[in-house]
Length: 112
Length: 112
Image 1 (cartoon, rainbow over the protein chains, first blue to last red):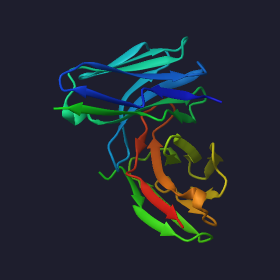
Image 2: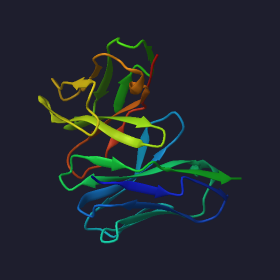
Image 3: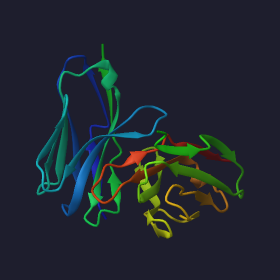
């Protein structure tokens, strides 16, 4: 069974700092990987989707990388802002494309 | 464009009662799924559907039933509620394999 781990569970940084969130998974036979943001009391919002054949994907201040062979993905946030404060989750999609396996998330606080 | 709509947002049930969580989408997506989110455990897949008339079990299906009579709707039924089913439930949709997944706002369920 696919296991997805996100470390650290919580992170607090001053505004303006660049930061990296980590996601690791145990089975490299994946279809793709997706990063989400979750605000308190809300659903998940998709940030970036990386296909298994890709190495990275960028959207604005966000950059996600994927290394399938080592079972790792990172989400890089540049010039962090207080509005970036949220929980960030990664999900690995099985090679059938039908099942998502989620990590437990990293809670990010950006201090003004 | 409502996207993914879940009702109710909050519900308190007594042990043994039954209820239905509603999920409706207006994006004409084929894939719909139900997840539960519990502290420290991430999101876990309950049931999913790849199209009208087709459903399948996810990781934690026991105690739940689903049906998919239309593309738009995917209700989740709790047959006989138990305290272990206290959780936040999310409905999600996507167009097809490898596509971005969209989540509803969640339904908070407490079973006493």
